Amino acid sequence: MLDIRDKVVYQIYPRSFQDSDGDGIGDLRGILRRLDYLRTLGADYLWLTPFFPSPQRDNGYDVADYRSVDPRFGTMADLEELISEAGKRNMGIMLDMVFNHTSTEHEWFQKALSGNQDYQDYYIFREGEPDKLPTNWASKFGGPAWEYVPGLSKWYLHLFDVTQADLNWENPAVREELKDILRFWKEKGIRGFRFDVVNLISKPERFEDDFEGDGRRFYTDGPHVHEFLQEMVRDAGIEDMVTVGEMSSTSIENCIRYSNPAEKELAMVFSFHHLKVDYRDGKKWELMDADIPALKQLFADWQLGMQEGGGWNALFYNNHDQPRVVSRFGDDKKYWKESAKMLAASIHFMRGTPYVYQGEEIGMTNAGYQAIEEYSDVESLNYYGILRREGKSEQEALHIIGERSRDNGRTPMQWTAGAYAGFSEVEPWLSIPENHRCINAELEQQDEDSIWHFYRRLIALRKERKVIAEGKIEFMERENPDVLSYRRWNEQEELAVLCNFRGKHAGLLGKSPADYEREGWQKLIGNYDGSEERLRPFEVLVYTRAKRTKQ
Image 1 (cartoon, helix red, strand yellow):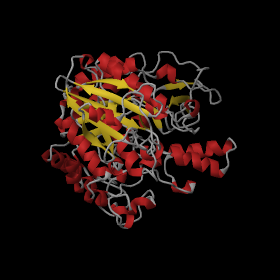
Image 2 (cartoon, rainbow, N blue to C red):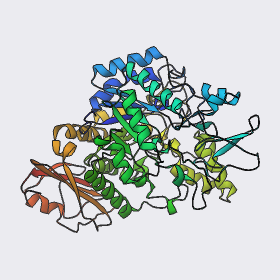
Image 3 (spheres, rainbow, N blue to C red):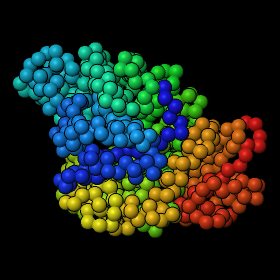
Image 4 (cartoon, one colour):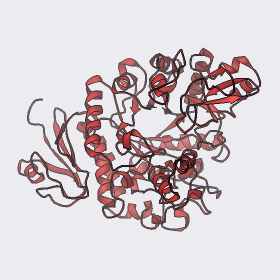
C-alpha cells in the first residue's frame, strides 16, 4: 500500500465549499477555483464527500447512482478537469463511497420494489406482518431500523434514514457491483477512497432482538467484514491507493486489522470514541462538558494500541458530521485563536495521518442558529421533534441541537468578509454565521499570526521532520487533568508536545516549560510568545532536540 505517513488530507463538503454558478450551492467548478489555495496550504489529497445523484435526504449519503455526477454539482467533464488540475498541483482526489446502503431511489432498490427477487437479494428484506418488526433495532437517525413495504409484505433494513436501504454484502453479486464501481473511478484518475461506515457491512447470519442496546452489537465489525474488505481491495485493484474506513462504534483490535498493511485491507481508519467525551452516558443528545481526562486516555489507548499492533490512525476532530471543535473543546470567544491552534497541534504531532476539514484551518465556529427553521440536517430535525416530545422546551431543544447538529460543520466556507462570505453571489442553501466578517480565509492569509498560517506550518513540519511522520509515541503527564502531553522520537530527534486544554493557567506534574528550555530543548512551535513556569490558557508548546538516549 501507498506510504501516507507524511501526507495530509483536506476534506471538502462540495455543497458548502464554493458556489461557481450562482445557485447558492457549492459545486465542482467552485473547488477548481480554490485549488491554488489548497496547494498553498499544503494538502496532498482532497477528499470530496458525495456529489453523486441523490435525493439529498442525507446530504448525498443516500446515493442513487454511483457512476454519475449530480447536475447540481456539475458534470463529469467538470470532475475530470478537477482530477487533472489537482494532479498538476500534486494533489490527488479521494471519493467518498457509501457502500453500506443506497438511496431507495437507486435503480437496484426500485427493481426490488417492482418484485424482482434478484434485486431484492441486493438488500436485506424480511417477510412479516405490518404490525411486527423483524427486530427491535433502532435506526441511528431515530425510530425503528426497519420499514414495511405493503406491496411486498416485507420489511427492509435501514440502519440510517428510512430512504437509505442497507445492502446485502452476503450476496456475491452485490460485492461484484461495488468492486466494478471502484474500478470505474480508478480509471478516471481518482487516487483514493473513503468508505462510509464500512465496518457495518457484514450483518449477522441470524437477526434477533437486542435487549441490551439498539442492535449495533450484532452488526458492528460483523462476522465477515475483514474478508469482505480484503476481497474488495484485492479484486478492485486499489491496494496502491489511499483508503480510509469510517468505523462506527469499533474496537482497537478490529482497527489494527483494518489498517495493518499485512492484512491488505485499508490504509487507515477513522474512529470516533474521542468525539463522545462530551456525551452524557454515551448519548449524543445529552450534553455535558468535555471530559478531558477521558479524552487523554482515549488518545493514549488508540495511539499506543495502534502503534503496538501496526495499525494506522486518521487524525481528526472535525468533519461534516461533527460540531466545530473550537466551539466544542475550545473557546470560540475569549481564546478563539489560542484554542484553535492548540487543538490543531494536539493531533497533528500524533502518529497517524491528519485530516483538515474545510474551514477548520481558519477557526470556523458552530453556526449559532436561533430557530429550528434555520437547520437542514435530517438527523437534527428528527431529534428536535424527539426532544420536544420528551418534554424539552423549545429553548432547551434548540440549545441541544445547537451544540450537536451536523449543520454546524456544514455552513458555507467563509472566504471573505463580504456578502455571503464570498461563497456565493446569492443566499446560500444554509445560512452563514455572522462572524464571517472577522473569521475568513482572506483576512487570515494576510495575518502571519493567524490560525491559517499555523495550520500551514503544521502541515509543512510533517513533511520536513521524519520524527512526526514516522516516530514512536509515548504519553506524559498521564495524571494531569488539564494537560495532554506526549513525546515523539526516532533515531535522530525527539519532540515534546504540551497542550493545555483549559481556559486557565495549568501546571505540569513533571518539568515546567521553562525547565525544558533550561535543559536544552528548543521551541519548535507554539501559540504564545515566550515560556512561563505554567502553561497559559489553551497554550500549546512543542519542543525539539537531537536524540540523546536509546529507547
